[in-house]
Image: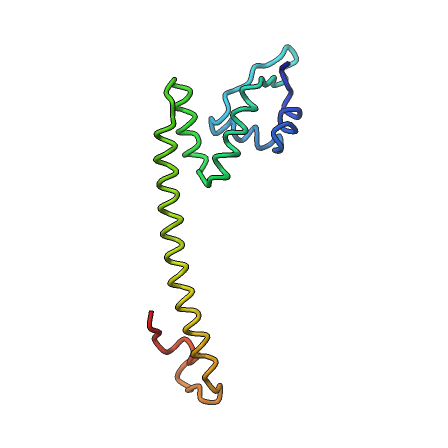
Length: 138
């Protein structure tokens, strides 16, 4: 595969050129070779890295986490166990968030059910809203 200019690799990766420059500044992409005209010349490995970054972001890895994986690979280590640990942490975070959302669902359903039994005329002057003034069971 011949060297590609930034616009070509951006189009091939489906990202804006500014994203590629940003990834270079963050160390996710190594500085590309420069041609005699000082244009950036990217090889196929840059496209591989861009695809990996996109896949990492789809798994909700942060750019810092993605950079840690790339650093391990660049140092010659297989990063699979590190990626596995990152994904296990993400899964735990998602499960915790799902639990929080389930509790919130019960809370909101209880408040809504309570509100449907109220008459707004019964709202006390000392309360802003009776619906949120009553403790819920949850």
